[in-house]
Length: 344
Image (cartoon, rainbow, N blue to C red; front, side):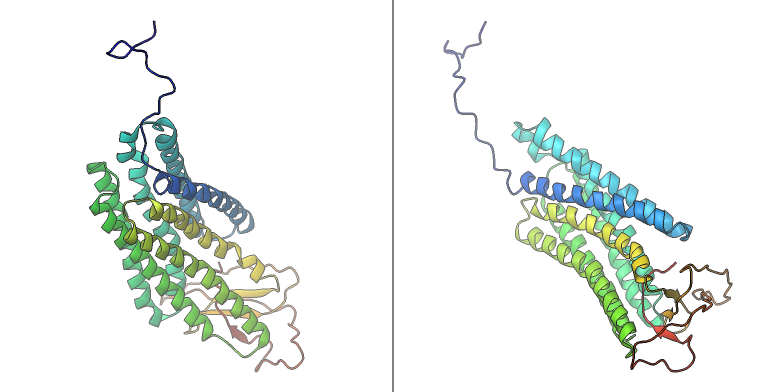
């Protein structure tokens, strides 16, 4: 039997349903951010596969870092999927559920902070290896990144204790965490660019490689910094929507892909047989411009009582032919200064 209203009349099936709040700048924006993040996750998986295939002899610690970032990124992607399904499918016609935080959105903050901290630890070490005078900057950037992870954890705790979205505590903690990440990105990128600029030799080939490395530093540092800055601006200007959260999702994927892009770029940088290694002198990152028959080289095991970076011994099997007008003072093995990031 068909149901009827209290006055005895049947309900009109064509009656206008109750109006729902617009989701364009909340879960609509979050959905778009997740879509872009899913594409970036595909890049992450592809780059991890490339890394483990192309660099099987890297240190175990570096491989563990890459594996950790991949696991965190996978969990981050699963959380984003659950958020979209829970709010836009399971509770598509339940406005009350849109005001409450589900477990996946609660955990999103701390996982985001963990991805950023793990990815940036690679760049922290790279700047640390440049020289003593840059290490105070590394310590400052490290403190900022730990602070960013602390605020991300605090947001997660707050959403579990007070399961409502868009409260004031979450707004200011999100802003503080993103601001710390922006400042840390700026410090690390500026340090890398400064050290690279000072490494110019006046030799065209070497300076061209340095220009390429500067471009890599800008791409891996400023891109994440600009994205985080946009998130900070939207969080301050419009804390009652989720546009800033959507941008944070994209920025999180950029951190992982930036780290992997730097690791996987070593082979292209070595395409001209430029051997990259580190020395314990003030000019930490250097190269021997040599050409080997096979393009392969091995890393000897050396013990330095001072705990300084290991020196890689390279035996020259064939000299490099310089362009007309170029010359290198000293013998054919002279070291040319350039920074190439993590080499081994």
